[in-house]
Image (cartoon, rainbow, N blue to C red; front, side, top):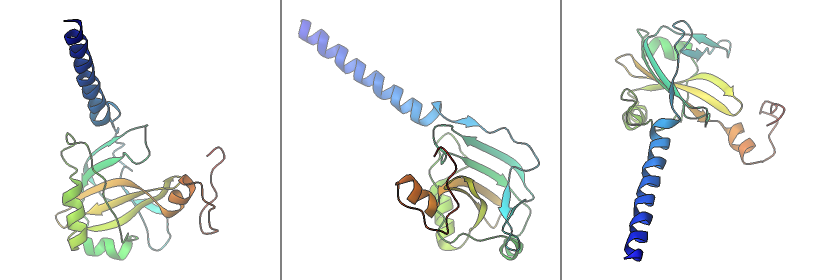
Length: 175
């Protein structure tokens, strides 16, 4: 009888730990981003290499302090894709990262498929928004826009402990 009770306690403990781990990965770390309403969406200009605010509405975003690549955002824009391609820096190999299922507006598979087919276009939002991390913006033809963070080449090298080439900005102190 004692063995059955002990086995039951172990099984229930494992189930509780599994539920707790699932909850923390899907819900606990993410927080809504408070929108400023004026500079939440920026893209890097071809002419200057500096980010500038673009026209946007319906901004919704989440982020987590546990990782610099957990940022996800959705918005709409009235700017046309042809105007954007002439004005902003394109990103060739953008790969959206999955968002938690409860963040309904961001579907990484849909965005990735649209980027791969050429239906959507990706632009540099802000390069090195944190050292080694770029904010990428993707826009669909219907004006739906998405943002996420990706590790850039300098970030990959820095995080792996490799020597940085001269083309990378210097690493901030303490990193």
